[in-house]
Image (tube, rainbow, N blue to C red):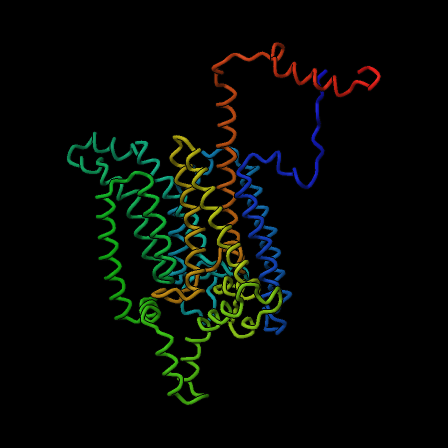
Length: 465
């Protein structure tokens, strides 16, 4: 007699019914948990207007709650990858509107601009800051995934039909024109506008989008032409920004050529208390505090709440979160963070392989994973003061404080989990529809019969034996 076993629900098998990638879900939840602890521990008890410990931690808890809602909405609410594909086609227009408003300070009556902000990165909506570049990163990854997949699948038919009906405009139906119109020009415009406010964000977005084009099978010689245009255009932009003293070119050059030793010598030569003294101090404070934090962390760290550098480095819970984590948790905490992002990268590769012939799904997952992991590595490289690495501000994804950035990374995780769910469902359907090599009948299964006999023997009384 066969025995049917029922699994009891417990905390250990809550994810049994989860059809998406469980490793990516676990990584996302662990990063969120670390975020709550790290933000709470890295904020001081010293109150500043609107930025006391309670308000900062409350903001992070709200962001985590909303982020979980965004992830759940993507996973449970969007069951077809085609929905993501449909909305992704508007990604460039959406990004362009936000970037033009931000860069050119266009008054719309909806958004306002923060006072005393030199770098144009933030819009305000009813008192809440929106980091535009964090939105653009995710939205443009999805757009490029759509554009490349549409191009490779031959779905850009408008210009081809127009060229067929108008022989004098035959060139608009060529693959080269379609690549530039739908892929390269939107990418170049986005990179140029982002560069006006953040050089590191522009390089990050450019690198990920170019890698997506390579993965999508865009011809290498066409990519070389695009890269040449980027270099020439970027050089012209840098020259104009330096000549007019606008944009972030001067800041980028100063960070690349900045050396702590030279600044230390200059600090010794200036009179304490003067404007020049504090200017040099500002250049030294953050990178040196980050180095001290990592050095003081050692192997075991100072444990949660034991950081000293959080009293020195302003907003250490944003651009210098990794150095803070190392200070409090030591080498083990540093390795844990690295392992989580490497696990995310590894699982992303597996999902991409399982996407089969769905090029859009492949590129969307690959692009989002690359964006998250590359930003994490850039953040950590800056924090450990890697040689030749300029001090540039990029948050640690899903850990650093920041509502808009946090929510956009949660959206990225939600899209990845939704696509992984769709991949899992399709694989299960293919397995169910597949014809087995050897026909199998449960009624005449010798293995099952043997197991049933063994179970009957176990239930016999000693007298019966």
